[in-house]
Image 1 (cartoon, rainbow, N blue to C red):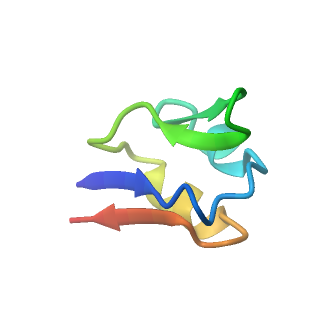
Image 2 (spheres, rainbow, N blue to C red):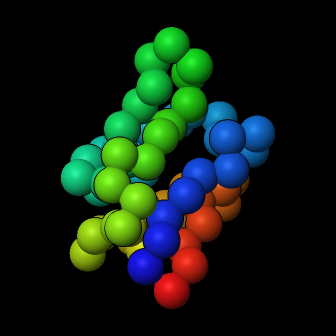
Image 3 (cartoon, helix red, strand yellow):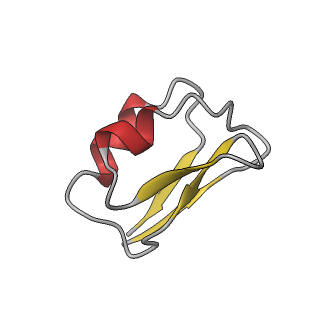
Length: 60
């Protein structure tokens, strides 16, 4: 699994970091989310499905 975020689409709502803090965190300076564990985790898919703009990309 490989997890990434389309930074141009991210609105910085923070849902992914709340749902899956071991994979995502907020980049306070940029105002968007960032991936801190690109290999993913058990909750990455749930975070992707929770994203209101669908900017989380998961590649198997």
